[in-house]
Length: 308
Ligand SMILES: Nc1nc2c(ncn2[C@@H]2O[C@H](COP(=O)(O)OP(=O)(O)O)[C@@H](O)[C@H]2O)c(=O)[nH]1
Ligand SMILES: [Mg+2]
Ligand SMILES: [Zn+2]
View 1 (cartoon, helix red, strand yellow):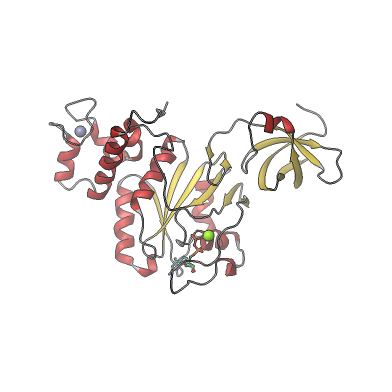
View 2 (cartoon, helix red, strand yellow; view 1 turned 60 degrees about the vertical axis):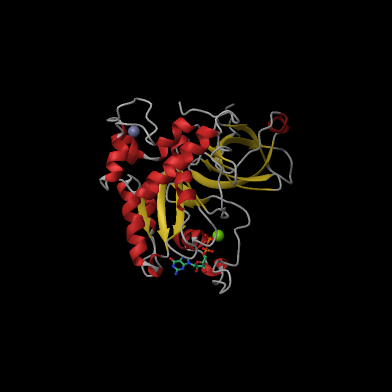
């Protein structure tokens, strides 16, 4: 639908059914408050931040614009709802709280299946430099992009400028790891919002209330509330897709005797040989086999999707 009064933009915020849309009007960036057409509700579509939309004047003085069209999403995460995410900033602290590498590996797998680029950020490296270096080395060797942050050496905007480009990036990870601290410092916001460390629970006192996209060079970043668990089954992951989260295993697995080798017990498995030779990280391998085994054992109870 093209007309002099229609614009294309991106939803940056949505509260109580009113959406903020950033759009360009003759080269000038503006923000509009928009309602959504009833047809979306009828079709079961709820606009989400990150959605690329078409808007036009509504004629209603209270909410001046209305969203008339939503582009097909390139990706969608449900909790919190964000559409068209292109980069996931997987934030984990090296300590306080101790890094949950099962959660990290699950998130790496889910990113791969959804074509979202994962970037790992290890925070609080000031509190344990040895662990920080070990974690960095494990995930760099596995083939991932890894960044490290500490108060003395915080991430800078230029560290993320090219990674994010014109895309949409979200901080994701457990609570208390420093997502809001990082996001606020990149945006130049007041750091007070994250609060002090509580001596008792060792995590920030304030939680991220609503999720909102913030302009970051030519793209956007957003902070998200923390979460503690992720179910691969709920994410529709098939046991045969677990290797997508293990590029370092995938790259050597071509030498196994059996084409459908699960790299657990089979004879002639080059993956297990590589493990015995110390060429693979033991923890990564164990998490691979535990995800594989769990999904394999439950394969008849769930309808899994294969990666195309
Ligand atoms: N020592 C140390 N503390 C940090 C670092 N990053 C964040 N923190 C502290 O960790 C606590 C939780 O941070 P916050 O940003 O609220 O975590 P979030 O729950 O992931 O958003 C805050 O008290 C921060 O000051 C870091 O790199 N080193
Ligand atoms: Mg936070
Ligand atoms: Zn094998």
